[in-house]
Every structure is written in C-alpha cells, then in structure tokens.
Image (cartoon, helix red, strand yellow):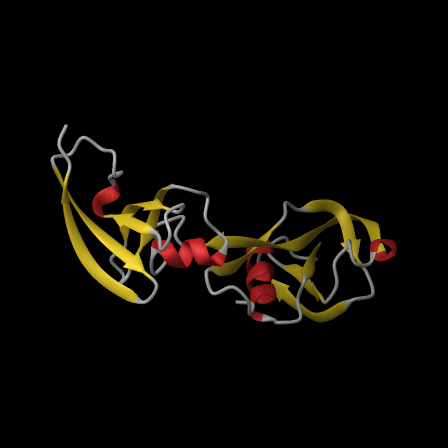
Length: 180
C-alpha cells in the first residue's frame, strides 16, 4: 500500500494481455512457470516488477516468465513484436474506504474529511473497527457529518430511527422519532 490518504488503498490489477508483443531490455528476473497466473504471482511478490512477459517453452506445460522493472508506457521504444509471447502490465486501482462493506470507513466524517465523499448518501462504516461494518446514510453537507444507522435517510418514513452523531472528536448517540 502506498503512503498518503489513509482512506485510500491501492490494489494491483493487470491490464488485458497484449499478445505477440514483449518489453525488452528491462528484465529483472526470469523463471519457468506453468502459466501466466504463476508469472503474475511472481510479479506481485517482486517490489520492482511493473510488468511481465510470458514466452512459450519447449514443453507445452512450461512457459518462461520475465519480470520487468519498466512498462511499455515508460519505454515505448522497447516494446516490440514477438510472436507467441504476451505482455502484461500493472494497473493500480484506487479503492476508497466507505464505498463497500469490505473496506468500511471509521465514520461519515472521516469519509467527508478525506475528500472521498460522493455527497449525501449511503456508505459503509465500522466505528469500532470490529470487522462488522454497517451501511449507513451519511449527510455530508451538515457540519460534522451525520450517520443514520441501518441505511435509513433522515427523511425516511420510519417511525423511530436511531442515529449516531459524530461531531469533531465527540461521539454520542441521539435517538429521534420520525412520524409519517
């Protein structure tokens, strides 16, 4: 994970293969692998790997894996055609906390303060950092942020909704009644 906004996590994916092409002159490691997936795993384990080439071996069950410390975008002149080989490149995808249950934020306020808010709406939080995330409605326009437990909006027709209000560092519960 890269340093920076604590609400952001970078995940490494690979762009679709570019067949019959390779990057030359930037190989940092070579190995024999069973398939592209194994080469991909080798690249993930190597901090200097930014892309990889896979070449056919003499045996159909074996391939040659080359890990590169550059990409075709960094070194376009070194990206060449090579029949029956394939090239793969890392793509880093930013994942923002609060947008899904697997990566909940601490609070609506933490989402808003990070600049990753999509505006008023539903987000995932885990204030206790217990691994049990909650989907809540976040009012991102009110000072301090407002969290409605259970995914309900403050305007919902529910007769009684429990709300958690987080303002600055003070946390307390507020129960409000909403009549239809």
